[in-house]
Length: 465
Image (tube, rainbow, N blue to C red; front, side):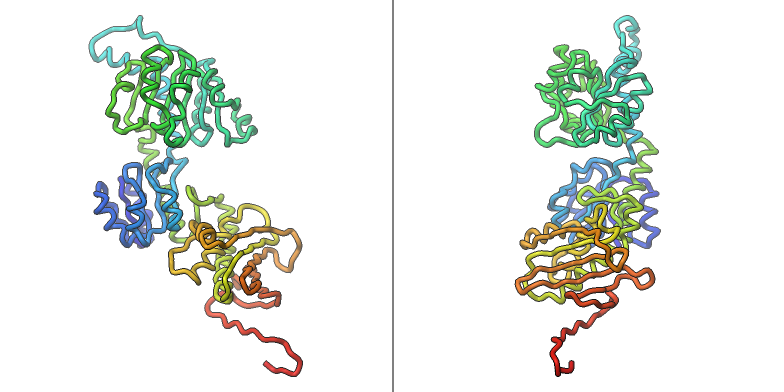
């Protein structure tokens, strides 16, 4: 295996991969052309935010299986192209949560107490004690936009300061918010109620989440903290609102353009600005690098998917439970792909036993990979298998049954073809591994391994063989 690390990572991340006996190319600061040459035979690419992994770069990496983003956001990775090419994209969403949450509060406190402005006056030899009156956090309303890992850490710190937490997150269960002692609000209602608003959501595309109209919904004393994505806020509208006194101030770690070329926002005394360093602590960098490298290693070595951005991820115990059945599903798909010679119109996958519960997307992907690898020369992985089926007009149907069978867990795969159905069922035997237990309605017991010879015989009286 060859791993290319394009941006600076701790040596522990590279060491973790090299101990597998893999080649690790950790040269940083390369031009896109030089990086493309290194990726010509690479199995994995690990980047931070500096390297853009666009369609052109991915096109020049024919063997690439996984892209690791050492951090949370994946704005610099072309997810559609990666998925189309069957490339898994993973990130490290929780590794820098504490660092970002702490920096959020550093900006929040600096804004509330005019720390940066006071420091600038002191360095200039001015004693501005009377003019720099701040505000307490105790009893103030903290509006958290996005209750993911970072947002929740911010809530905990807000409660420690005696703040009242409200949040906007349409994808969070009300019980989760209740457990956090947080009131869920619509975004405009949060803006009208909050004294401090802090953003912890992905980029919202071309239109800023906080444009002039939304900023107008905020209290004139409110302060906005952004350690998420610079494109979430219209900077010109923010500068105008603060300059007019329609907004109390801001703490910004991210910007629409980085580094910012327009100082209309960062030059305001009511704005505390830092150069995208919220996640830049020694502890976070170490964790981010190790977590990303671990995800890449586990996928390349064992096919284990964790922290995936373009494919469902599972908890470690679920991964352990499903792993033997991903092998079974792939081999069932490969078996049917070779015995079925007619045009396939539908692939039906049915689960029995304990497999009938839970998320089985890994089993669907494995079945399709096994099937397509026997009939296509293109690169097929669980990431692009469903897309390939859709492109070829093949319908994929999943179902499950609690009906008792002779096996604890059973996978049934049926191909609906232009010439009829082909049908196979398999189970995992504790000592013998994946086994074929039924083919076209006939009970069999054969290993799903190596080379199989399938002979069909019409049972006619008086005919031998």
